[in-house]
Length: 139
Image (cartoon, rainbow, N blue to C red; front, side, top):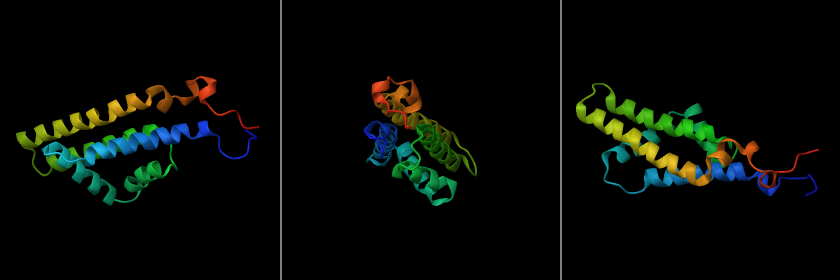
């Protein structure tokens, strides 16, 4: 490579983050009769409709402008916690608390296997990957 443009391996963290986000969204929005999954879908729409940093972060992840996977995980769990908050307000009930616990458990069950499949080290610590997986230094 002549140093001009973007090398293939420069795109791997971006592609990995986008693949992880796409996989998580697919699982969240796939058909399910589970009340916790339905609550997660509604929380996702409401979270994005808040605007500002709530929608800017996920959109920048999806567009590839922010390839930081930690941002993906933080926003994913922010949506889950937002969903739990929606369930518990104004008055929590045992049923709502149980649904909230299943929502957090379901969110963990969605994101962690996807991250493991993409490679924890590759996503969160790309500098520790062997040199043949990384881009050559720019002069």
